[in-house]
Amino acid sequence: MAEAPLFSLAGAIGVTEPMQQLLASIPSPSRSYISLGPLDIRAYGVAIGVAVLVAVWITTRRWRRAIAVAQDSGPQDFGPRDAGFDAANDLVGSLAVWAVPGGLIGARLYHVITDFDRYRDSLGDIPKIWQGGLGIWGGISAGVLVATWMMRRGGYSTATMLDALAPALAVAQAIGRLGNWFNQELYGRPTDLPWALEIDQAHRVAGYGLNETFHPTFAYEALWNLVLAAVLVWAIPKVLPQLRTGYLFAVYVFGYTAGRVWIELLRIDSANELWGLRINVWTSIVVGLAALIAVFVGLRPSGGSELARTADPEPVAGDVVNVSDTDETR
Image: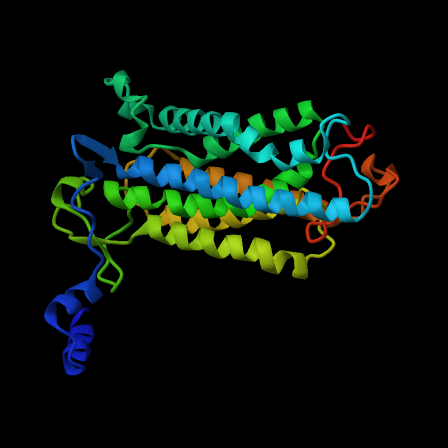
């Protein structure tokens, strides 16, 4: 009954019946893989691969822009004194070689640990990431830790790299969520909204077999992340020009967790709970509050901190001028 006004209006303006069906819901792909001759390539894996490539490309552009600004402002150290500009310029690709696998391992481990009941009797399924099941919390944490270790080991500015990485991660997460569409997973409660998602019977959560359309929560998260990326790139440098280098990443974390809370509350897939809420909701709240505190710290003058005692003033997120750790800040 809720769809009747939509169909009446569509018929009145001459929209054909197939188009009316499209307006009433979003179909799910019939297969979760792409066939190329004898090979079946998992769409989930393709989405993750494209997401990684796009993240590396965006981060590289932002990092190179940062070191170009630094170079124009005068002689700078882009890393180890014997590395020079070219080594700093190509740093992102070198980091990705180690940080991406580390992130994938961390993402899978987080998922398996927090949903171990799914794998208790089928341990052989743990490595099958192409079937879905990557926890963003473990992925971001592990990837950033690996990258940070490599940055500090090489003497590069971790703060500047985090600023370069923040919007790239948001875009990558949006692309990666397309894999959930192909797998027909991570959707929300039943709905008859025009953008409701059709889910095949075989992929419906137990207890919802009679429902045909659901909230496309993975799509909500993808759109949220794209908006977040735009805010990080264009709005934050103007609204918070005093934000110190490195703290743009905290804004990204807070923005992501703020969206993840309400999106997670819409989901109906099985998940471990604590005090009546999904574990991911609690994780979002705790991590989000910590990120918000970090943002306020990043807005404060450096005062008597170690960074404040360096020769150059502390750069801000919208005007990065130093891309290497000085001897005083390592």
